[in-house]
Image (tube, rainbow, N blue to C red; front, side, top):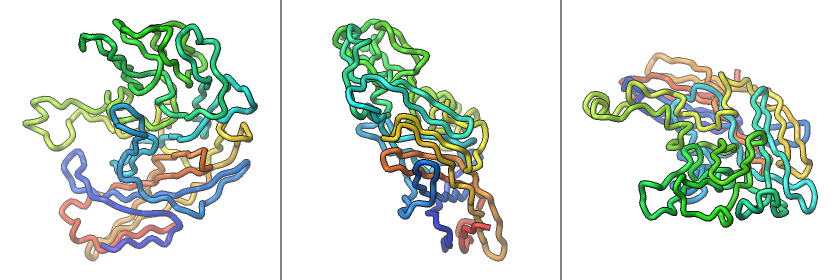
Length: 330
């Protein structure tokens, strides 16, 4: 199988079974772009395909900072981000950050470190704070001697500030979150406001797990190892709900990053409108596919973003007959 890629992007492929058990060719094309005030352009260094979720540490206690590219096609475009809140001036204790891509928008309030609810209105000063799930509201509370009273926030089990209903933690000593939703600020111990974040969502967290389907005895005897009948493709989407589009973006949308750079506010258009067409030749026949723009991942520290286009092509029984896969910008 020959891969022909004269485009400036990175391309790779894999073969999976779809939910019906058909052999399916997954073709991924990834473009890396740099951005600055008012403009973005193709980056000199093109980042490789990422084959698995990259966690900040132990997957049970940390979040994803870079999502996998190797999944079936997601049902819409998702936006994720890795970066920091950058204080606009010395002695900053609180600031607003946000991202807008086209009509998608997520805002958050970032505050310095706070220990205990007595300090809830007295955050420490800061220069930079990582915009990761570990700094958002959430967490896991195993302070009670009886494990049946252990709890975690289903939407963010790796964050700060969460207390179980029968917690043995002291409200005066608990570490409070640095990142909160502007309209749902934490005020009292035991509250459970929704976590807000920009980073990829792990597959076992509530936002995705609710779409995973039913893995019961019937699935084991009738469907395994295929996906269950009630599997929902929204499980594949790793972007936070507020940064998940209803359909696929065009790649020319206007972007605004607030509070994530020394400039304070950066605005620029996406430059991802030159999506390649994929051609697959099997024996004497061939097929073409226009891939979907399913993911945009920003790294505000590096001032880059990657876009991921993907196509799935049914090649049932013909994998060995594939002569070449070719990407062309027409």
